[in-house]
Image (cartoon, rainbow, N blue to C red; front, top):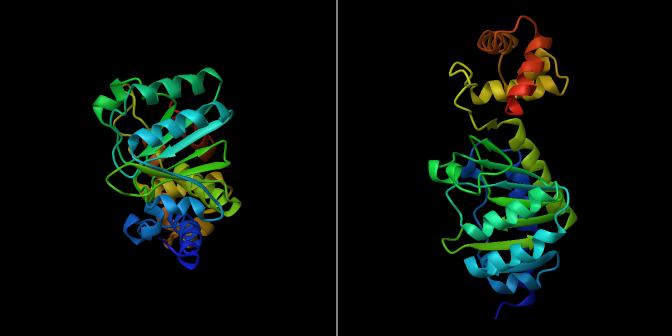
Amino acid sequence: MTDESALKAPMPFLREAIATAAVLDTPERVPSAHPLLCERSAADIPGIDAVWMGEAEASRGMLSLEPTCRESLRRVSRIPRSFSGERSAVLNARSLARGVRMDGFAPAYTDEYLAGPNAVGALAVSPRAPLSLTVLDRRIVLVGTGRNDPALIVATDRSVVRSANRYLDRLAEISVPIQPSWRSKAIAPTYRQLRIMALLAQGAGDESVARVLGITSRTVRADVAELAAAFGTRSRLELGVAWARWLDGR
């Protein structure tokens, strides 16, 4: 039986892990799962609402949560997404029917997944995904423990929710939408170019972008020029419009 003092350890660890993931470029530096987070007793920790162990329990838990999702459901997976079954497809269809916006981030998507019923919503390829988690309506967080046997930690703690949303917002900045077959093969931005365009979209100037990324302003301008050529635009305003449409999958 885990004593009370030991039970207090995982909650700050969970906050730290998600907050760290939001700012890191390398998944290897994110803290690995705390052993107690993989135990059912972790549900006794203040701030952790439930721990679902195993695929069947996790599926039942998601089934109970799905009706409460009204605005958005965002997921990130550390591994390439593969086909995940009929039950998930039913949940996705229900959410979409209510107008829930569904965003998915993963290092890659298998052909099987893209051809199946789970390939719904806005799917994006994220070059770096340190943690696997799901956020419902920016208020409920489900974190994967990283175990081989599926397990989810459910938390509504404000600091955990804040860290999780910041992590997903960061992924949105450095991810690219699934590439339709009609898109030009020339449009293949690098990770650095994704970060440059995200910072420029926030109103940063060339010098500010260079300082944040640790590069020269000449490199910033060269990357922007390369993207402008790929998109066939003649000004930064045109590039900004084309970039926004491209990120939106158009």
